[in-house]
Length: 324
Ligand code: NAD
Image 1 (cartoon, rainbow, N blue to C red):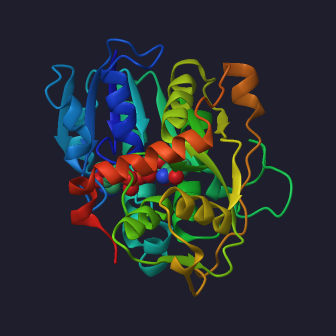
Image 2: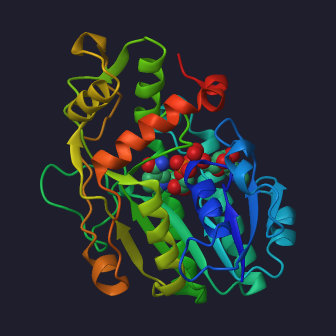
């Protein structure tokens, strides 16, 4: 099996690559992995450090929107996990151009190449943010997309394109949508790493608005197991939600981080809320649990403590990209 992981030097992609090359992913044992990554500010080759010497890894620096390059890279590929994206909502509010090019055009370029090469499997890695915001209840895979941020709009567009290539051309596409991920190797611009690295540096943590927004947290290892299940056993043309089961307000999450780092509430700095900030995301993930046997394994308390410990132990990794 030859697997192409786009965005494999980022947070989630690199976790999947390390797991596959360590043969920790059922169904993908022995797979060879090609990583295609542009190494934007969010990509970091150090994320692949532990597997850099693996004879089963091939790293190709480059852009998913570069059609001739993608055409070459796709030769002989059995399955694509498309995780490359511009992924930070705040950046998409400031400037959405890169989001449209990478997330939408990049996906279309990959889909076209997969079609030409007859690639047997295409996994589009997506997010609960495509649905917008929900006060109560949960979204199912049949809920309509209604994205609010430019980031979410480009992800929704990419998902719809991917599903259209299945319906129109029969391309064996599967789409996954997951909640907020956390774990090691996440860029310090994202909430948990940002707060942890601020606290480790003796700084305050910038909490948006009243901190009442609700998010469902999924450990990146659980997400990757869900991705692998959807890739190997998911039904083409279908969407699968990957949920976590730990819903917290940002204020509650901040409280847990302060506690883990031995800091008090005086370290919270309330800052102007994000424009158009979605109040709550919530996925019904019954389908992947019932049909593919998925279960999240990492208890949030354990995963969060281990994540904090990882950042405490890996300052050389985060220091160059820390956000002030
Ligand atoms: P990330 O920002 O950490 O990593 C993105 C990677 O993509 C980086 O290595 C970057 O260099 C690469 N990249 C960016 N533009 C590229 C381009 N044009 N060509 C090739 N490579 C490019 O993101 P992440 O958090 O690992 O997210 C991965 C995927 O998972 C994204 O599609 C994202 O939408 C989705 N997702 C993320 C979360 C989350 O909480 N982080 C939740 C659900 C879904």
